[in-house]
Length: 455
Image 1 (cartoon, rainbow, N blue to C red):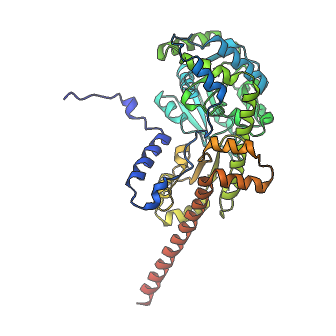
Image 2 (cartoon, one colour):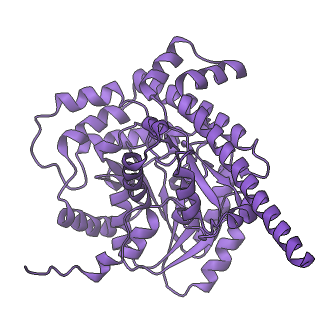
Image 3 (spheres, rainbow, N blue to C red):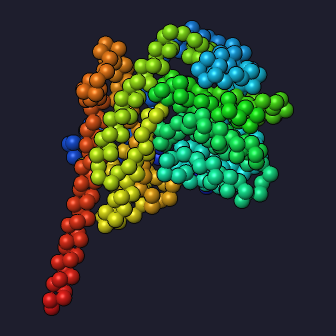
């Protein structure tokens, strides 16, 4: 039989960590012999909104299912107009529809931007697990910029790194709101980063896919508004509209980029011709102003906040654990490095082994470890996604009886997200067991050493 030779460039790329973990969990679930395994696992690993797709979007898809013709490469005009109005209405960001290009998800559009833009990429870490594989696949020069304890880019650190880079063009990836920390940059923080970028003519790819999930939505500021001449803003349906499967995203180009957009259009036409036409028409309903959409955003934001506050407070009850307090998204970053000695005593030498030990019986808990977030393998931080619940049921119950007090919210979580409650308790149990096992091993070693000395 003929042997097929795979390009080395592809061989060097690993399966994305979230998909790799999903495969592992499926195999583990089928192999586990304990009766307790039948419930599956506590899912803190996957970043997918649990809510149903908004009714206006679903209805628009049904109505336009018969539209089988190719759309224009940048996207249908009605959708680009709707996105322009959406940005102006929600983010006070005025973008000419001509600067807006639609694609099959922001992931693809970020890849396309990295394809077309020459230069060194600056990747702040911890980072979403999708950026680095793309950068490596495209063989881009890149440098990590580890953020400070507050979880955000320090302008001085950014400038010091820029001064060490010799490529004439630099590209900063800014993820705001941030995955994995759930943090949001203030306008002042963005202005300080902009001062550095403007001074050194650094381009910014601002991934704002979680913008609409910001709990206090009026506090979100788009980098495209602060640095319009140098920022590519990406956003889409996946997170705020719970429509990851629709695969629709958009990019807003900086000002005065006619020639760049012409070249970008050529890339899109070559790679995938155009985004699905029925999906584009469905997206119009998601971006157009309507009371139904505004209510949907408000309810889902509030539920995310309730779940996030509970997860934050519960994890911080574990001695030595520090977490970011989410202001947006459905994630937080938990720092478990206070347990480093206990990990090592239990022969857990890196974050991958930590993740694997936590999914084993009896814990059955999945999270994304530090090395998947572009941290050092020995960094025992982890991303916690708090979306393991029935979003449709939660929305219905929230509308029927909106929780207002602290006790109301606890009761809401217990009734609507029992796997989050039980999963967090299981994480607590894991660290108690980790410490107890390490202490018992230490005691045994001390006893053995005492016996040796007495001989």
